[in-house]
Image 1 (tube, one colour):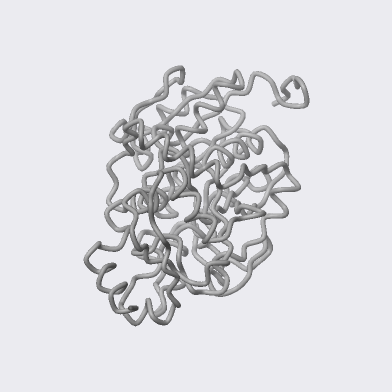
Image 2 (cartoon, rainbow, N blue to C red; image 1 turned 90 degrees about the horizontal axis):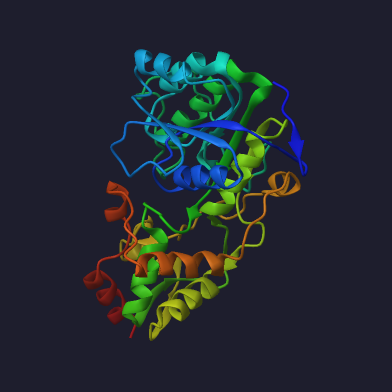
Length: 350
């Protein structure tokens, strides 16, 4: 396909977003429309609502007949797949095979969990990946004794392989660590914001100077669309190149919520001794050395621009304060330490 370019970017793009009704998919759909592109979305119509202005197609990505019906709506300059997390590699292979004849490129939202070294080692885009066949079912892989690697990581690595087998050099993989921002459904930043609003003594993971690298969903959406219109291929780590210290992160949460509170910085050994679950009970906290050592320089060189994390915190609070409601998702309930447990740990420090 040869498309006219306007102002350095392809004009008149036609894209298909698999997903498109919540969080990243919704932001991609909105941003695509704002660029004047034609946006088709494909989902089951069960979670969230289609963005006004898209061409919605409802169906099941695991159903060959639904995929055939979808393909009849093409062609597209690019497919952006935001919904592969809940599907095994064989289902990714099914979708890519069904749509290859009607799509020029495939932009796949993956994860840093596909790396063999995650979360123990510092990572680059060239770090080795976990090995998983392109046609694997949901049983493939294992979770290590220390929580890594994970079945999820194996499954996502297999999904990448499925895309590569079908799209080759026309495939792009975005591998974010943590995505935050308005519309978040996991509940990491919303929990810290509501905890900051409650105030008082706040259990916080030392060291306070630890830098974290979450990215804003809107920045990921813009980069995904840029890649849909581009010509490059391969993987991009999507992490904030500057990051923010945990102290500044909590400080911003307190500032935007007007919470009157004081973080109590507690050493990791004390937290684990009290049975505090990493990554969930204190969201964004994990002791593994590589968690926040993910190099995103290739993505930055390709145009990734990340707003200050303070802006993500402010805008997420504004969304919540305006009765922002994420889609119902079980992971929301997994995040945040119970007030009784937090109080007990804090009391033991006196």
